[in-house]
Image 1 (cartoon, rainbow, N blue to C red):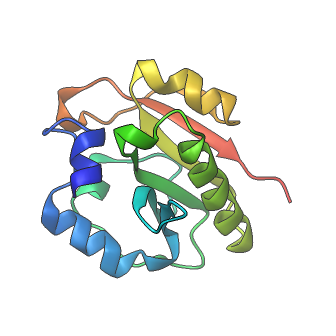
Image 2: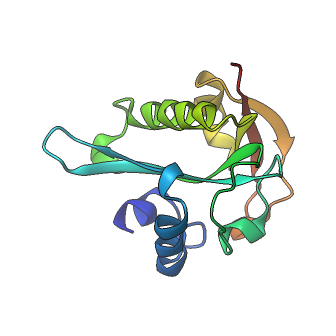
Length: 149
């Protein structure tokens, strides 16, 4: 929870109950980055969906991943401040991409704030415009990574 709350505002961050639910139900798409000494530096968590874009409902109600779903939707990507700007977030995105390919998903989708768009574009994601999400009363953008096999 400390990583989640340092990466997001109080309004944006997952609740403790939501995080426990994600850990329990999304074990195959909840990836953790650790330092050589074993300290957790960050994580990424995604859920499988038939929908291309994240809806606000997904932040509250998570179901187990289904093999028939076409998309992985990133619910959270966070890295502790002392480990930022070391490529960890990019490595987590790549690790999730590898999982998505093994699971034969069509794409990975996420929402982000305007100031993060460039980061995701550098990592291969395409900005598909303003999201319908009003999570935390922010303006979010849909970023999508199409997966090629």
